[in-house]
Image 1 (spheres, each protein chain N blue to C red):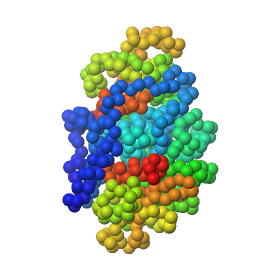
Image 2: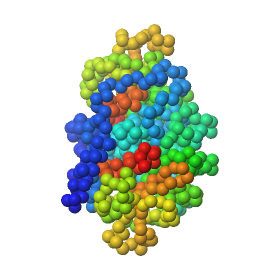
Image 3: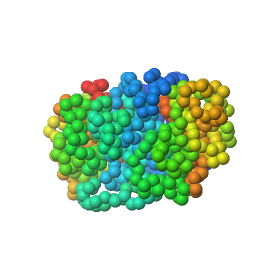
Image 4: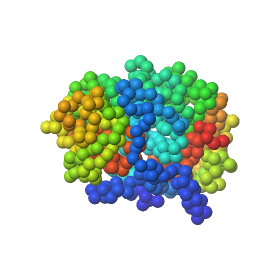
Length: 286
Length: 288
């Protein structure tokens, strides 16, 4: 436990330097170039120096949403903002899952984020999300053909059960959550930038999602040590991967079973894992 | 880590909390949660941070504003936030699902509607697709239920074909004649909890709005722009009374409303004074 605390403190220091880039010295906000006195609704796209992430969690299909969803979206935004690595567009609708988004009326949207300008998606949808066949094609193509990234969290595993290709994209399917308690996690990630800040084993409290139909191509970074968990009749996967990466066509995919609990996104190590996962999916790191 | 999860009480504690809130550059309040019994946090107030941007008008600042509002509630313990860019929760009717549409087991769940929330933080832009019943329910939420409505910046451009919305919010957008520029904000009410942390006047770089269709008899002005420092010959300047209001409160039936034009530049949401203004406005509309 002492070892773990030391490890956490060290990682904390590293994470602080990564996550909390000081910006207090930036002075008052400055006018944004090219953004003055444009006709309404005709703003030119500001030159972007950062990557663009769509933080997408369409939760209209029931249980409103997990308590953690908004906090997760907010933390993902903050990680990109404070590190200066990416700009985030939070969306709880799915209109932006298209290279040419539509309004609710079906007309073309006037602008805003879309798959053509995004570099990666943070996805925390839940069960069947209402996107049409064309959007499904575009989502797959975004990763497979355009080489863009997806970082998916927790409920993402339950998504699109009736859409086989989504399972191939994410690398597994949802098979219940036998435990919501403290568990021991085994770090198998080796030198992966996403998990190398974790100790070889550590304990964490969350609702652990069980994966089935696990992709043989996926690389497991973290898994649950089921030998240390109480017996459970619905335990089917002795390997119990929790965090993995995989490629899908030209693109990169990361999934994390964390986190169900909103406060898990305040865990420095977990936050750093998501930031590093996003960097990897964005091809900032290898 | 149990201590890290304690809720901060209302009243004087919140003032201390807001002063110690994490702002960019300060130490983030990340907590290690390798804790056996991390009880879920509970919040007595619930805020819907709503910006339906499916029409395509998504300023870069909207996401950062929603995220900042979420963080202010989370770190202070005053409220939790549900961020939505769709308008499904804008109803007082139960949100029901057909069997099998959402949950594999075929169970039906109730999604949260307006009745769950104590206030809305609204950063919508222009026309938003709400059906007549949703519109009526949104007005009832404030007018009849006495809930709160905090509106920022482009909220004055929203629903321009819906007169009652204008009455609720208390003004309408009438161009931003100076683009993004520096203007001097004069604080008219330095007693209000929403603006008492501000100096008497101070410069702000923003896309300053010109408002119309407001009446000082119906709104309590907290801050305005210093017209003597504005270019009143800019082509789109329409106000002849030089009254360029920047923040006000009002009531709407039983409910409370706050609106401020300030909030277009994304970086402005990192300013502690702006965060405090919106946080205190949320407290005020929730009658804290």
